Length: 147
Image (cartoon, rainbow, N blue to C red; front, side):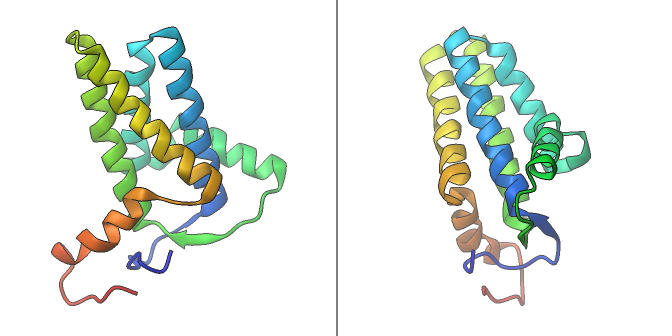
């Protein structure tokens, strides 16, 4: 996306989009099975995506799927995607805590919002957090202009 400032790390957009699709599937399975545990595991996966991508189960499944399906490799800026993973982590932790605390409507609403954002990424390549990153990053990056 042109509104995302570059941080010089590059990732494969096909992997990101497949991973987003897998996130939608996990949230839907969690919702239909009413499994707070799956939401907690998804929070851990978001943490891995943000801080140690090689340990993300969904990331690994996405990388394997992209390789086996021979999807095109399109390198994009990694900074906004790491920011998106951080927001996903925060949201999934909030959803998990809400579910465990008995605030199930709030927990499932938060999880549903992440599923919606993940669907937009998977289906259309629209990263809502990346748009936010483009506007917010000047607050913590000095001397860099937005592309």
